Length: 341
Image (cartoon, rainbow, N blue to C red):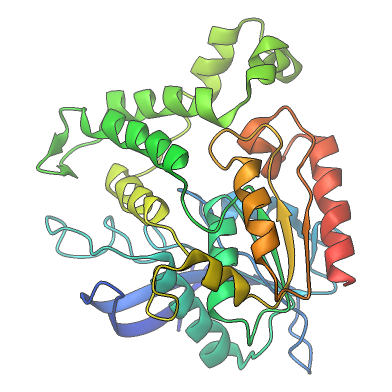
């Protein structure tokens, strides 16, 4: 383990991936908050979402916050491809294709981190939003021996066909940029990243958000002003090759895509024993709440499983409500109830 800036690195060594490829010197970046108690039973694992690094998601960690760092020892593992953990941008050689990493691979290394670095055998809660929520689902299905509770916020057990189409559009916008050569970017795709942001603007927010001109609450006088300031630059600071790597992880996400379940989603869902909270956004357009509705009755072995859609017009952003007090309060109340179960 080495320390870098405000986070640490778990050196996983040479790792054979689910695909059969070997990644030499795989590195998992992570940050911890709070104190691990003597019993090592106050652990919350909080995987990152698409393109995000721990600094982007730690807003809900703190004393008496959604994830209470006074009571819990919270670990944020950075998903591969986000620029801190092993990613195209930091894995040599720079001109070679980055190996296809899956959620199963990511969760396997996260398990090694908590066991080898901290001696943790039980996790009180795995909490995740979006791609983080998909990782929480993978944890609950693949490691039921460790997971007591899981909160899947705006996520699903499998990337749906509709969600896949959205990601195809994002990928198409990126690779249409002339900076993309043979599937890799040789320069910053400025136009492609801007186009990607405009696609996200329509999918991430809801019909009601634009109909009711909710962007005015953020101080914008016109819709175009909101789009230009918020979405045209949303991904400008990210590495495009990293984004492609994470899109691939997302599109191939499926808790049953492993030897233990053989692609049988019902079997994978029925393997879950944790207390499960499925908390989709009521107006989320790509992690549709109906995915969770279909999953719920298949969680037959979960200690308890509840579906609590976030009653919000903020679409997918309802699950990451940094500046949306009502959505934030809803999430906090439901997480508090889950942690008492």
